[in-house]
Image 1 (cartoon, one colour):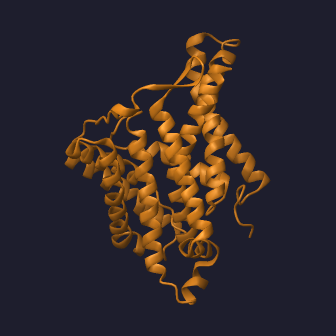
Image 2 (image 1 turned 45 degrees about the horizontal axis):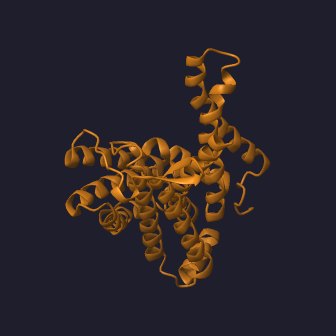
Image 3 (image 1 turned 120 degrees about the vertical axis):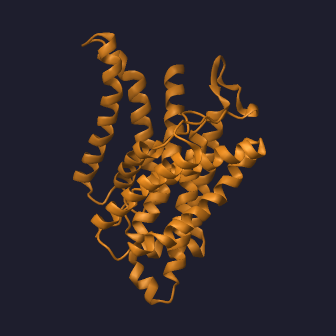
Length: 304
């Protein structure tokens, strides 16, 4: 039971990281009708910018705080230079253009930071463990990720549900042509939404960096899971992105933790250990397929 509790917490931590990435993506996709494959590149750029600023300031917290507005400005520039030319184009053009952005950002990172990966150390004040139960330690940094992710999720829910900006975001997700006809500056709204999505992606990237590494293309694989999450939760739904991220996180982590022991009853240990991660990933797509069959708009997507 102690081991199960640890894995559930790991699933929550992964789910919150995925939510941060998927929240920006679902806002961009739901409001702008923009398929942005380069969203994972913003996740990568946030980690690299944080690595640079942490080195300059010699402080993880200060470097992370400064990396967020820097990535916001980067998102505004990308939206103004590239994305505005894609809104009126079909999804195939958007896919091709944003795939080109992935290649551009990968080469930009290679030019500025070099091809070798970077590492960000866990901050000293979070390098210890805390006892979640007597004799059951858990890394304090992972607890910090859960806390930050939960706070951001609450703030985002408040922003979308209780503020005028959130009202415009929800209206844009329902009918962006109508709010433009009512006099809302749609270009400014799109810029703010895209910049906000870039901030969420950067926050996820810089928090994940001490657990993995900062490397070229680090956002490409996780972007696929982010798309799966917004499809399960419903395009344009923040609540759906949160619920789906929690489900995907638990399936992935708990599956990797417990499937090997189950598979060892049918195969040898080496085969079971290698098969378990693949089966866990497959289960995520099985859930997505089941949701699409039962409710094609996603769990919390708007019925049309």
